Image 1 (cartoon, rainbow, N blue to C red):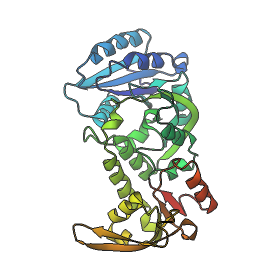
Image 2: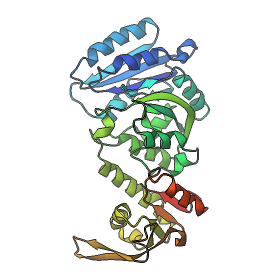
Image 3: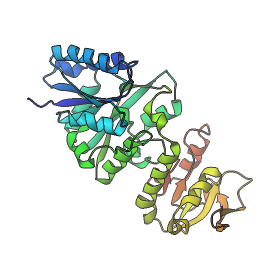
Image 4: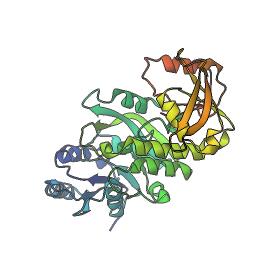
Length: 348
């Protein structure tokens, strides 16, 4: 059997509500009018609704049009990571286009991302997105769509997931093989973030097609809501302690409030000893000291002064969410003329 050029990888669990719109968007791809061979690989992860019936209907549709359509799956749900791996396993494409069943492709998505990936086999390729309903998660969408090429690798601790949104991923198969696939620890695991970090750690590149190529649908049943923010936070904290803080012999934490204190309290003893101060803009905090207490050991673990942000010496670990203060924080940060990644890292 001839190998495909591009495999669309679709994990699905109880997706009957979304299947038709998703498949229609794949059927409208401009790449189907080229010589590139496209196939669709679906893993039905223990669905109990009409998912299998609808998939088989679309399998007939695509097969009649010369597009391969493979379906695998199991009776018991194993989670998103296992479903993605299962779909990749039955695919043959040189390139992989990841697609969530509740999202909709724009007609040129596959062609434009394939064109980008063809010239960079070491990159995860993303795209800009639009949201449905319109204006849902506006801060998140603006952040993801406006990141510069440099920030794709710099702001990897500032959100609930990767700087390239998982539903937009496209890559050469070797990218997937190098990481070894997604972790299969079941529902609630941020398998995309773990894969993303492992890709970077293996020397992988990041690239984004700066066009809106996907309608990213927001709804309460999305798999992303099964992932606890606490778990993501711990994964991000672990990585920043392994990949950033070892290069700093001292640092200041920007935010003397709850988020900053929580971060400092959670640091390893070695990194805790590198913290020299908190900095802030709150006049009620500046000039005072913060004592962080360990309830287990029943003692103060560190006592730190709170200084004005203009007095802080880099490097800075910044624990402030972006785009929440009508631009005031961003203006304050810009006024310091610091270099992101060298003089400061965002952790929020």
